[in-house]
Image 1 (tube, rainbow, N blue to C red):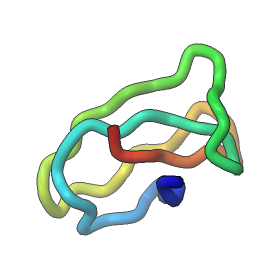
Image 2 (cartoon, one colour; image 1 turned 90 degrees about the vertical axis):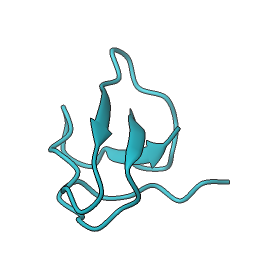
Image 3 (cartoon, rainbow, N blue to C red; image 1 turned 135 degrees about the vertical axis):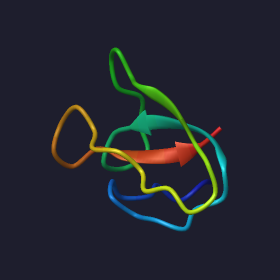
Image 4 (cartoon, one colour; image 1 turned 180 degrees about the horizontal axis):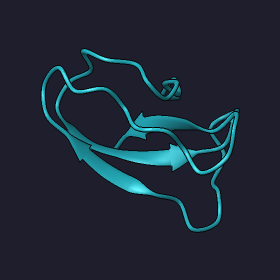
Length: 54
């Protein structure tokens, strides 16, 4: 299982990330973002949600 990453975390590998719930579950209207090396992960739609690399 992939470990969810908290919003605002930096120095993650570049790539596409998908928003998930606090325990890694799916969320409705999940955001998908692309970050470059060294960028911070953006805020999620709801407090407690996290990001996972696709």
